[in-house]
Image 1 (cartoon, helix red, strand yellow):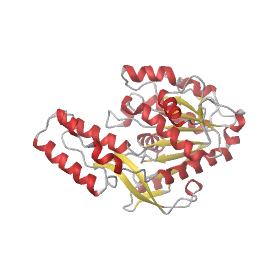
Image 2 (cartoon, one colour):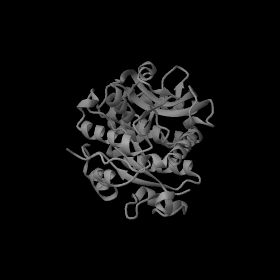
Image 3 (cartoon, one colour):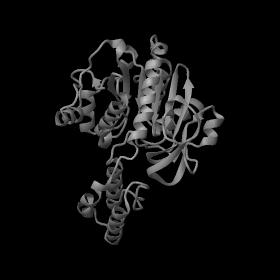
Image 4 (cartoon, helix red, strand yellow):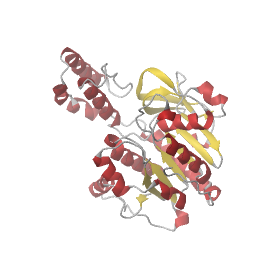
Length: 347
């Protein structure tokens, strides 16, 4: 079933994709009550802004099957952006104030790269907390992705994130930790990508009434939920929306930062992502870089030697979880039919 967007607001990445694939129409159709309307509040930095739009579009398309879905794009206005990012948002995104004027069945809120060690010191904290309040009253369910999940539990219950010894980076196998309609029909073991320096832990979450749905074999939590007012808040520490090459792009970005002296250590290779042959090629590139730390070395990064071996091993599980989420939205439409108007714009 097509994922649609308001006419005149179709980002070029979506339009180009559909021209290449001769796929579905992009503008919304159907009676309002038949369409499941979702607000995608995309707060990713400029370098990942358009990729993230497309990742969620494609994931929702795979999950929707027979459920008509309409997306409307938003972003926190307090984020620091370059000229390209500002122009893209001005052209294709709605103002955050428009959330209070429209009806949305669900919302997806992404994180962004943190500037401060304490999330409450981020310049967007006040706007984000107002957005979370709006979502709790005006949606049937809201997805909080990665850093947004950390911000959500900090704001709602004072649960603090914990710094990891190294970046949790790669594709990790998770197991079902409880029964819940969001993971109905999901295999007992499922792979999900992660890319983060911090985590919230199971003991703190359970102590504040969260239900942990999936976690790694080592006990690291991924998916967890809690009802807040009218809305089921769905938290992912990982990134089921990632596409096949996303982790490769992030790994390249982190190597480039190392070569430009923007980070002290060479980045750890993503776990569970490259096959043995590709890993050997990348290890050889790492050794050569450590002998000669020159920014120009990125032109020699062995993309062609590794890209064909990469597979989206998590797509089936990710689509099934989001399929269950969309079914939840459909079954709870009446709950958010008359939501309250919480101001979510700037002060």
